[in-house]
Image 1 (cartoon, rainbow, N blue to C red):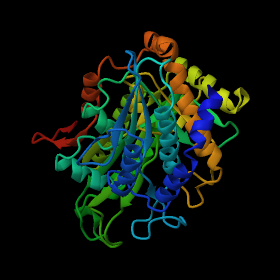
Image 2: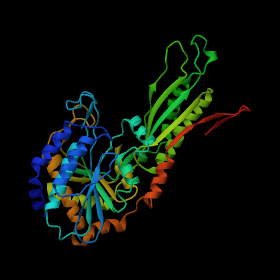
Image 3: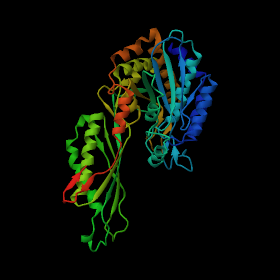
Length: 445
């Protein structure tokens, strides 16, 4: 079967090269990927699929049904690039480039879908949902917040939004193969960090710097906040892979004026939901206490970014077995017990269904950097397409025995999509964190 799949994918090499090249030179940011969306829509329609479009945002899904009952497997490719000024193929107006390989994802998943659409699926049970999804990269948050305020989206990443819209309600498990590099042609890890995006505004009272007793220095409050975070770092548990990294994006108006407004942007990351919530509460308390120490005010604005990834080991091993049929078992690796410290909204998927994010070879240069590019088309696209097709075939053959085995042993962190959406909603925070009472007491919220 692997040779049949490889030869069938090969028929679509030219179209896959076209997709890769077009998207490379027409990169778009999240929720703005209309050119890439149009390209992929046309490509899937040419194969005979009937895509279901998101409509007011980019992206779509298309189903392939075997005609026999069984699990529905969801598989992704991502449309968006990210701002990388100086990248040789960056859009000259927006500086957005495909410096993470999403263009190769789109080409590879197209090849997978094309091959399976053409092949005899009479030995399979169940169905496949190919989803071309927007907005995985976390950037242009003001634009996304504007979309939220207008009611166009509720959540700021594509997979979160598609979950909320019900596009995955009938799906049972999912996976994605992300372009990467490294020693192994295919690899995956069981854990991945998630994150909370934070905007913290310290407010003081401006006055002449030569007479500072009349003011409240918001910069000093921010400095104490930075020091408080550093004092907390020894309380972070190593296995949780916690990362807290704030920066000051507005640091005052004039050197001879006491700063009355300091804006800090921050992210809190961890590889499990409980650690993420615990550390974020400590960080918010540090901000409130730092402001209260000098009588300043502070507004906290938290947005749930990506959920931590808890990937299904049983699904991962079936995937690695199939990938090994394409490139050799020695070129496939499941890193038991390790955490991928970068974040992705595949983590959100892992909270509600068996999920795996795997990486393939083919990329070169620094991820998200000016030198990132697809150096090996066969690894990034051809091998990936064939491997994904074979994974789907192996999962759904023999009455979908392997897929059913995954489902019978799966233990997602949330019992339902609604329970997960309630959790996401609880992580949105916008509040004044310090209240000064008339009786002279100070209340931290």
